[in-house]
Image 1 (tube, rainbow, N blue to C red):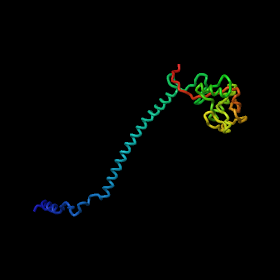
Image 2 (tube, rainbow, N blue to C red; image 1 turned 135 degrees about the vertical axis):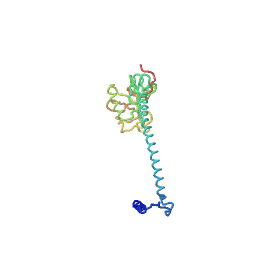
Image 3 (cartoon, one colour; image 1 turned 120 degrees about the horizontal axis):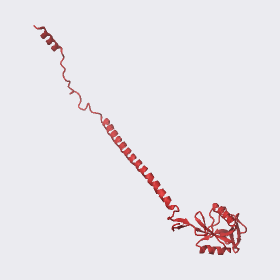
Image 4 (cartoon, rainbow, N blue to C red; image 1 turned 45 degrees about the horizontal axis):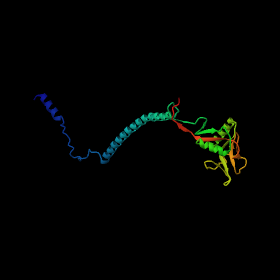
Length: 222
């Protein structure tokens, strides 16, 4: 017998034969994920989608705000330019021979007379006798009187029936604002000087101060 054939036969018989293992004994859903795993996966996907959409929306909002900011600044600058007194724009202006103070125009008479004459003169000028509204204005009028070198009737007189001082607009004098020096009696009207406000006869001879609101002047300034 040929030795090579015997060796080959033995080698062949010793080599194990591998057969595929059947997995039929495993349950059909053994490789499937549990239900809660699937739910968690879906929720994670939904969360990622929402996060992505939120980022897109945020980026769009940022771009809109960045673009809007220069536009808003331009609008404000344009509005400010419209209110500035330029060659052809409307501006607030006092009439000739009137003095501006805040939102008021002030006029000092060149003649003197009783309080009633000042009341009439201011009315003709479409104005009223001066009504002092605050301490700052009071200090300004004191300094104004000093520069002018005169004392002036203002729109304040004593009402004997009520025993109070009243402004010509009907408001009652605030004693914390103006202290009236002198007597409080019938036919008393207020006069302001460079240092004080005092009571004088309404029939006395004094100059007066008129006031009116600033008005718009749309005429071009040359």
